Length: 122
Image (cartoon, rainbow, N blue to C red):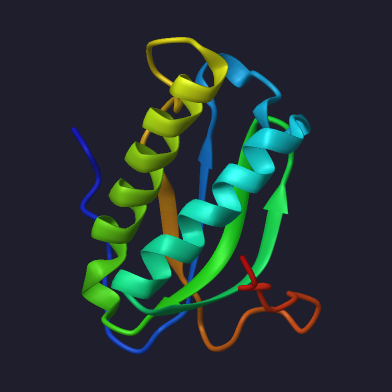
């Protein structure tokens, strides 16, 4: 059974997700560019602050503060679905891109000082 996700207003979340079967997807420059573009598009629709994006081969993590904190599941669903559809078209493949559900945790305060702000130029 899925653990109920904790959501709140005006808080920072640390979130992350992994690629299906641990494939090092984010070693591909096209995947990195696509992720950035999709995040920029979603941010226009559901405003949020983002810091500390880390791409680690088969997974990514970042800090996010949605304007409406209850929209986090919607933001992540849209991110994962849009990325999957577009990546599969680019790669000429079908099937799952992501493994499990994304994980999230509410931070007690601000993200770490070394978490850089996202570059939103697209």
